Image 1 (tube, rainbow, N blue to C red):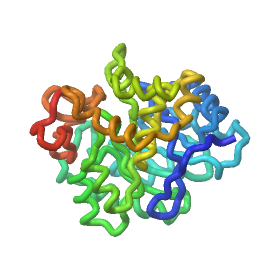
Image 2: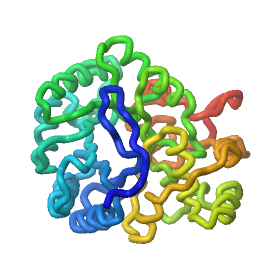
Image 3: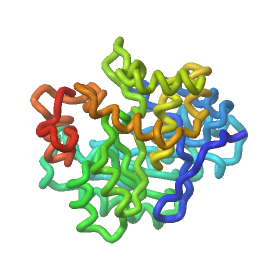
Image 4: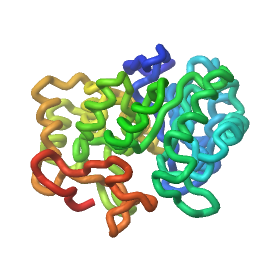
Length: 319
């Protein structure tokens, strides 16, 4: 039986479950681990699965869904265009569809705005630009093999630039988002244009061997203790109550169940969690893909349209 979680309506009418299973395993691949994780998730009531060409596990995700015996139309499947395929969108989409071995894909995202050709990351004004890539994605909807298309890792200025040159508004923008990085400017832009925001790493994903500071934050811990729930449940519930789709990842059966068991937070609790990023040293990305020179995959934060600093604090603090 599907878990009792809200679904959000995309700007084309497609319904998207608010909680999904993120299938990035920390490195490409995963094999049987991915299959087993997805199978556990299906049994726990998950019907939304988030993978990507770059994750190298579309085959296992699709196999788990097929083997479940549950009708295809009860699942929502997201996959993504790799940076190295911006110049061959149609071929890449068809490759993902074959790998998943499903009748169709629910949501196809431009994984990153940077295009990589022959191993070199292109500058924003080199073709294929984000506008070229998006223009090549739009005709995929005519195939009836994908229900919605969107983007990922687009900051507000970059998203606005795309919107200025297209008649088809992306259905989704998937970004890092959690109480330490609430992404208010992105959320405001997406809300204005009817774009649903999906949060990846919604509980934080620090370097291997470390713990997300969100899991020990006194505000979250206090709410979790008072409610008799896990701290992760508080964070995920906060995001969903704000209208944000979350795709946490876990291979632990107990954690899998807890992540899709949401609670109703009070207005005061929502406000308290929303203020966590204002604490000293808390407003920051919790991911390890930032280069020391202030770039991510060879683009600057400015080129990505990323603003990692809260209003009034100037430059982005430590990431």
